[in-house]
Amino acid sequence: MRIGRLFGIELYVNPFFLALLALFFVAGVLGRGLVAFGVVLIHEMAHALTARRLGVELNEVELLPFGGVARAGSELAVDPVREAYVAAAGPASNFAMFALGVALKNYGLWHTDLGPFFLQCNLMVALVNLLPALPLDGGRIYRSFLAGKIGIREATYRAAGAGQFIGLAITVAGIIGMWRGYCGVDIPVTALFILYASTRERRAAPFLFMQLIRHKQEELAREGFLPAAHLVAVESMPLGKLMGPFVPRSFYLITVLDNHYRYRGMVTETAIISALLDKGADTPVGALVEGK
Image (cartoon, rainbow, N blue to C red; front, top):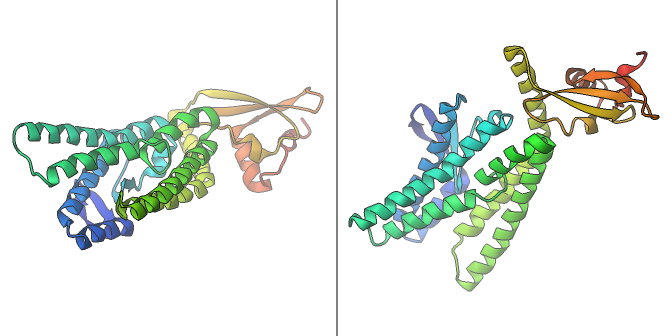
C-alpha cells in the first residue's frame, strides 16, 4: 500500500505492518503503534539516504514490522561494501534516536507512557536487525562479509538459512510467550514475516548470482579493468559447480587440467557464463577447451 513520497522516495507499507498497527489499535494503544511506525520510517529513510549518498539509485522503500526493503536491494547485494554501509545505517539511526530519547528525558521532555516505549522500540528494532540473518540488516552485513570469501550465492544461502532458523525459533518462542502471558501477538507476527522473507531471499539466490555476473561485466566494460582471480579445475568439473566460488569485483581465469593433472588450456569467466547459458550447468569445463 502506497502512503506517500518523502525526499523523492516512494513509501509503501507492507500488509504485515498494517496488521501490526491494527493490533495496536484493537488493544487500545494506537499511540504506541504510531511511535513504532515513526521509528521504522526513520530507520528505513536512513537506509535510503545512505544508499543515495553512496550513488545507488533508490526510488522506493517498503516498510516492514522490523525495518524495510529498498527496491535497490539486489543492486546493493552485488556490491558488498556498499551493502554493508547501507545496512548498518538503519540500526545506527535507532541507536541515535535512543540517545536522543535519553537526552530528552534528562531535560524533562518526556511522556510517561510513550517515552519508555520509544526507547524500547528503538532498541528492539536495532538489536533484532543486527541478527546475522537475512532479510535483516545484520544478515546483509553477514552476507557482504561472506560474499568475498565463498561467493554471493552460497553467502545468500547461509544468511537466509539463518533467517529461517531465527524466524521459526522466535515464532515458537512467541507463541509460548503469548500462552504464558509474557508477550503479545506482535512478536510471533513479526517472526513469521522474518521466516517468510528469509525463504524468499533464499529462493532468489540463483537470480542474484546471475545479476552479479552481469554487474561485473558492466563494471569491466565501464572501468576497463578488474582484479583477476585464478582457479584450477579438472576437465570433468561441471560449470554450475565451478561458478559457485565466483566473488564480486574479481574476474576469473580458470586453468583447466586433464584427469592426470596436465595442462589443457585456460578459459575465462565470460566463456563459462556463455557455455552455462547455451549448454547447461552439467557441462564439463573441459568441453570449452576441446581441440586446444
